[in-house]
Length: 332
Ligand code: CP
Ligand code: NVA
Image 1 (cartoon, rainbow, N blue to C red):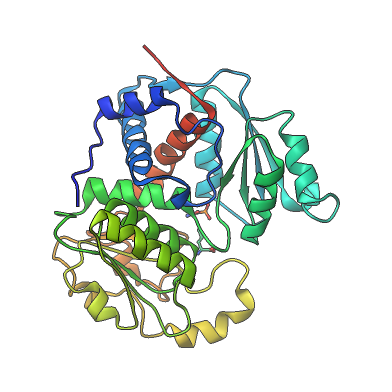
Image 2 (cartoon, rainbow, N blue to C red):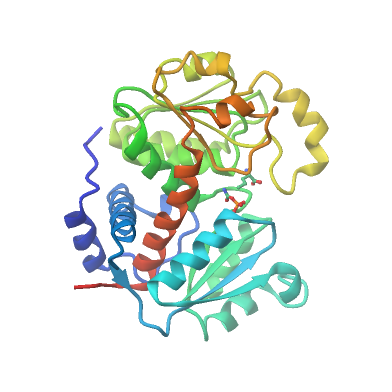
């Protein structure tokens, strides 16, 4: 794996390059590996500047973002709204129900109308296809705030956390224990793009989508990493420097909850399993967590857990995404 530079110099050059301006961000693989590294450098620069109370880049005040939520959210909603306001733009918050997304009005009409007022449409949707339809009709940049297929903004925050906190991340793999879901799929693709080894252990039948697994494996051939999906959590976690998990029942799958509780019973991230990882491995969870299901309370709240750093990094990651898609200018 090539060393990844999170330097401010890299961040400044990437902002000035303006190569992401006007683009959509539906999948982490909408970025090239070099662009993903650029986004991470910009996120890291925003983080350092915020800590020091110095602005890094800002938008014209005429930039606005519409946010549409078809599902609940704490972290995504708060961090996008704060990111936009700290960049100098404004946010209009909408629920899928109030605007009748696809019922009162077709998705494409909503995308076309919103594009006359805002420069970005950030949406959390039941079906990934809704984002694809929105992006086809909208001249505004469409950003995926979670779909049934991917959670790319989460993956940027996760990768930033791994680069900041995992011990010798280039010497051991990232392990994901649990469902091959939206969060797992974006993290798998992101690791592949950066040449980070990634192993996912899930029950049979809960593997990542074959097309995304194939895309990740092809990408990892280019970047020199390894992507593996298996059904043995001990094999996946042994020697890992970062261990991630997520809920067994995602939003929209509530009817399958009882079945999933049985299927995933052997895939809990607990102290016994974590012992197999690198002794200083970090523990990631996108949150919200279900203590006693996919993760035990002692692991979630234990010394190896970086879940709050990860949640904080959503702010810096999304600020970078917005700044780059909307063409923010460096301050000074
Ligand atoms: N991790 C995450 O996306 O959290 P929310 O569902 O609260 O936005
Ligand atoms: N996989 C979870 C992530 C929540 C942030 C879900 O889709 O509900």
